Image 1 (cartoon, rainbow, N blue to C red):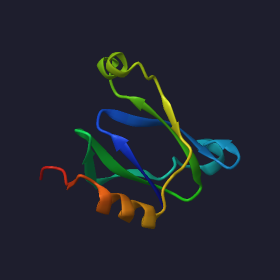
Image 2: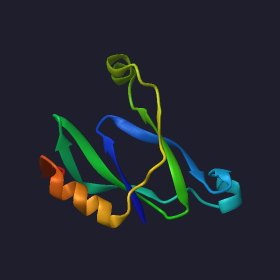
Image 3: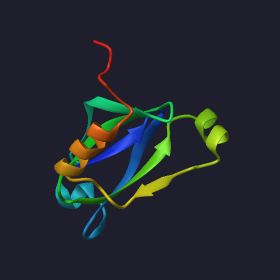
Image 4: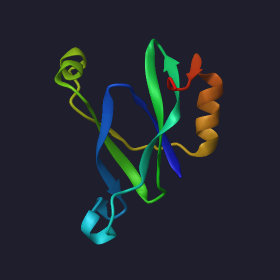
Length: 103
């Protein structure tokens, strides 16, 4: 598995694998991508941990709402450096605060 942290209020959009954009017809399924119940707070921003399957090499992320787009003037970001488990642990150790969602 590979991982990335994503700011609350953002979601993933397009997914790339070695052959280009993820093709659900060719793969016969959607890519495995899941928000885990673990996050961090950095600079007053909540970032949630996501896992993706090894075949994924890049993830495009976008704001969920127009208000986030207006606040940041950012329409999309492509994450090209996904994390391995060791990098996630290092990030969690260095984080200002580690959080779990309300149960």
